[in-house]
Length: 172
Ligand SMILES: [Cu+2]
Image 1 (cartoon, protein in one colour):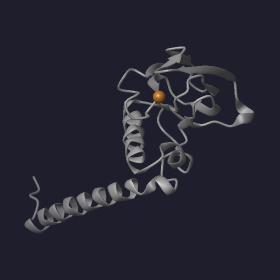
Image 2: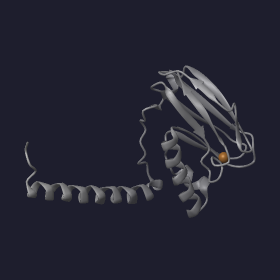
Image 3: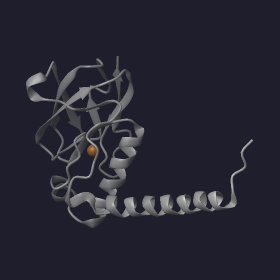
Image 4: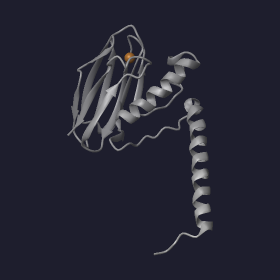
């Protein structure tokens, strides 16, 4: 059985240190990414769809702290145009994603809210799986679902997701 030479162990330790530094550097990049677009556009559950390839339109109405309908069902391979109608007077967000993508977007929005006007900041922030809809406005997002699974749609304006502003998207 081969024994790892001491020098190789040192290299492993060095690699771990380098990797930690890389993670820290990425954290800094993410923190300053709101001026640009450093967000992934491809996730396991899909990617932005083409308007010309839309199979179906789903209308989602936003009221106070809830979405109507409260859950959605789509098919793997389907391209859906979501028409998000904000019927409330408060600004909301519509994010498509698994719980990890939701919490990442929530962290970004919390940071944006701490830095100033969230609507303006969100307008300069490109996140292909999310759309910010001001009170009374309607916005669209076209998404192609890739694989079967269970994800969520949610609003990540600080405090909203936490108070139940979310629903399941079952990808069949
Ligand atoms: Cu909201």
